[in-house]
Image (cartoon, rainbow, N blue to C red; front, side, top):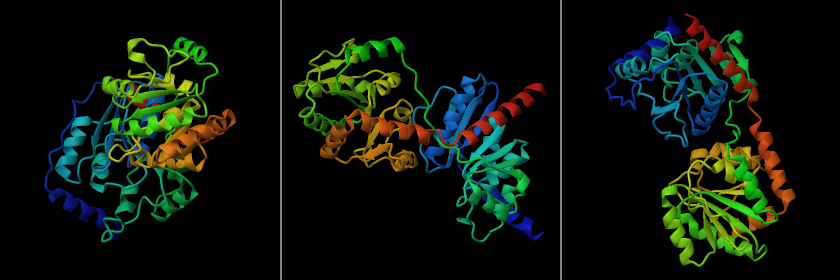
Length: 405
């Protein structure tokens, strides 16, 4: 009886919690809806890539991606993904959320459980799987006065996938049967190769053969001065070097073009149909959907939206997947775990200003140095394969069973 009191007391409070009307971004789509909850942006990236792999194998569904209230909308979501914040721990809001989306299954990543939401999902008959369970994700935290709530909520999951042996041991201490725990490694965002037009890539590679090349991707206007000063400095050591600039917002292409022309740079503008000539110093790549081309061409990528605060960085796995060494600024809070993993493996380096950026470009212009970093990125991105493969099989099995009913 004592073990059931914690969750019962919590739910009683949740029933009296003030209602904060849930806003839904759209109606429930037709077909299967997989609900994936991500406690961080890095876990959101892992779920998005899982969905992309499932879609590539012909599994038809929509991913409902939720995050806590303090985690922002992830970048670059595909058309088959719907994002919103999780509802607060109020029973009325939870019922509206579940009634609206009617998910076919739930993949909850990490920890930081919401007891009322998970309890309500279980009551609705939704299969639930705790993925990438972490040792430190189940502390009493906000519920020190109800220490058994996590224990009772964990019992509601159909299966638990632990990130490592320490996490599995933590689950056992919380009363989860060993038979319900699988140690699969971390579900980590990995390198997914963006597509490109191979004929265009081959033509550009031939045009640029023998030239040193680097890419500044997802650039904010206020970063342009630092990038241009770094390029000017590196041209002293490699006068034929070409810089490709991709604005974070391609509609700002004309503003970037005006700035580059005012400063006297010899430029080509991709949206105008220009191709770099021997004397071109900067290619302004101001179109959408061609990052796969630029990451393939560039052995070095500086990931923009990272030098100044307020943008939080951009996804580093995109260049990592395509063999580009990664440089980045100090403001990457949206993807900090990903950059930390890559930097720890020697696949990425932080820069802070024009001097450190130009220095890194000069060092990495040696092909062997860029190749070492690119190989390190590949090794890091291959981690987490077991958890992803197991989840793909599990999701397919559940959806097949529902289709057969």
